[in-house]
Length: 327
Ligand SMILES: [Zn+2]
Ligand SMILES: [Zn+2]
Image 1: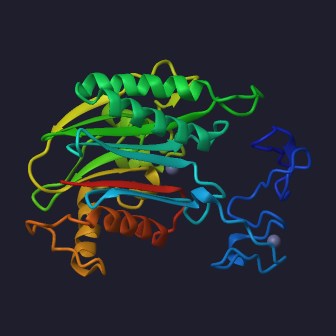
Image 2: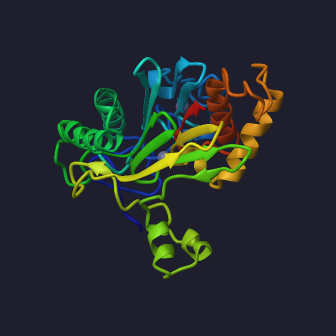
């Protein structure tokens, strides 16, 4: 007989148990919180057809921020998770000449991962907003402040969860330079008809074994370790020194920050470009076609929504967060 452990309290549970007898935690992801019926029993409005229970709508299930027509983002719980452990923060400073974007994905094996993501995104964003005049220094400062804030989250040190932890990717865009810092596998992309590219390199097991020549990417992707991250922001991390790149913005296009809930379904910059291009041509927001001189005006929220929609239509297995700056 297989004995498993409850992810919350560590008590022994049987493979068919729907709830942990010790602490009451639901053991099957994506199912009814009351009777444990599978996700297929739950309708669009959140009603369980088995027991009639309706899940309360939660504030963070769908979070949308629009700062202006050029800067916006969306975070969505997705279709399979009970909670949204992603968070993001956006800000304009310096008379709207300088833009700040931060996206975080709480590490689900850690305690209070949703709070970790929110705390990190908000504190990093605030620090970048005060220290923007020296972007690289601001980035290091922001990650250190975020680490302090996350380390201050109350953590009941029981044996089965790690201290509150999150991935983080942040961008400070000033004049024609985007300074990008990150820890973990949340990503930044440059999307433009004249050439799109991924700007960050994941801190992940997969990236490391491929870079070391130990496995091909195809082999590594088949491994159960493929999604493991090697760096993150949390009290148990060695430090919060981010990887940093300075990207010279080559012309008009979109700076996109996102969590793996999106890029798992479209990892290549070109795939994301194609999805955005389709939106730009057909969207009800009457956008100018991609490449038009006024393309991008009002597009930030439309693009964010459509990329989240794309991830949901692809399965929505994870929380999905997208932030877009049109340049
Ligand atoms: Zn039910
Ligand atoms: Zn995720």
